[in-house]
Length: 576
Ligand code: CTP
Ligand code: MG
Image (cartoon, rainbow, N blue to C red; front, side, top):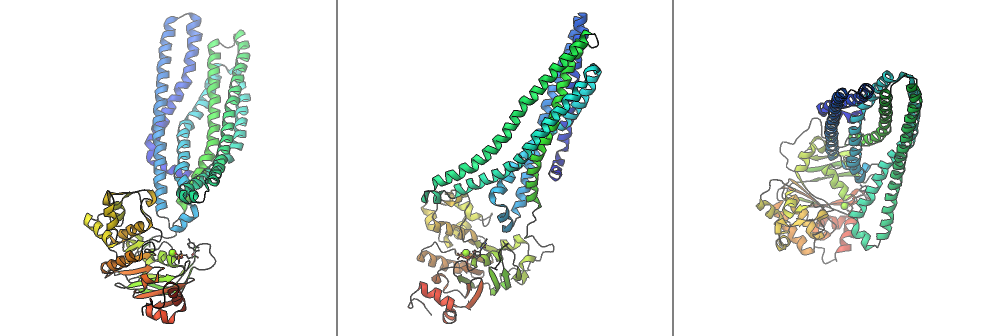
């Protein structure tokens, strides 16, 4: 929590202003009952109308001043706490952007979203309330006691009874509510996760008639959260009548014991009235102080969840003394690379050694789960190798700043991902400042021009969320165009032609060949036809390289490769 509150520092002037105003407000509230007592005891008792009017005007001014201070204090404290919220969200977002894939996996998207939104809101709320209460409550409690004592010392012993009673009630309430608050945040996480899965998986849910099942799942998470929230709220709602009861009983007690003393002439009527008001002030401040103690754990639970995010140091960070190859040509080299996913027992890739050169196409083939995508992810530095090293132009990629590394790579992921925006926006994602001609050119190489031209708004056609309004093959081609437009030194295609028909596949590869004349092309493919004419084919089997060579060589020498080929082509089609 202290760490989070550090982010309040830039708003010190707002906080100071709020605290000063809150002080004025408290002073006004403390002063009012005294003035009132004066009116009663001096003005009314003596029948002095002028006195009543002049003190009345004074009361009015003090009340107005108090109200104005209260309004302004709220204004400043809201500004400060909303500012804190903004800063926190910004910090979390910035930090999460630096996460490598491992860290994303360990938190989960739903929880990261809750932490950035709901948890920050909790802290924001508590900060705002605390800014108002932290200063008011002690001033009013202490000031109230002093004033009450000065007015009617003989009945002040009542506080000795009442304050402990209120404190006890609050302690009990906090004992019950604090654990509930912690579990509410976790339940919001769950609800978010279920909701997200439902929204993204809606097609599968429909297709498998799982709407009812999903409804139940959502209802369960929803009800779970609701029940906990109801328990907390019931408690808080129950608190109010109890507190009111204590307040009223206190007032009765004050009047009871006070009236006797008025009768005996020890205290005056106005004093008693003021005393009642001070009593209320004191009791409310005790309640406020306890509220802070109840709310604080909730905020600190949220703060902890936020700190967890902020404290996670991304595993993949830029080198302290970065090295940038003088000229990036695009020579990629794997040296005895072994890699395993966090928590996995067996390595996914073992002893991978091969090189890929500019102007040449290196193809990687292997059955599903062989580790092809993983291998490409290592070049992108989404993960770091456990053993061995990957070099680009002789420099270990861990020595190269991530943005330099990635800006030289045109990556087409296995799962095509597009963003909301126009087609042109999506292609420009690869290069912000690309001209219209460049966008067009990239689209034409990717064989996307035909279908784009057929659309009503051509390049300005809006891609809907998740790219659902284009076909799988169209999506793939837009992703390819996005990589091509960067004119990178290294192209990485992860099974990027799988959704294309043979004819488009061949045309695309032909066009690409010209475009990538001086670049290194690393291409994963399932279809032998796609990679047959590659300069070099790497055959992966269960994370190991079982053959490197041309189609011809491998067909002769590599069993795994021959099996793959024969499962797809007939003997006659195997051009040697
Ligand atoms: N794997 C994993 N954790 C991940 C991703 C993958 O444990 N976050 C495992 C998979 O279970 C698989 C192996 O790593 O056994 C290789 O995965 P991948 O590289 O994705 O295989 P590909 O060869 O790309 O398979 P495909 O042809 O199906 O794309
Ligand atoms: Mg893959």
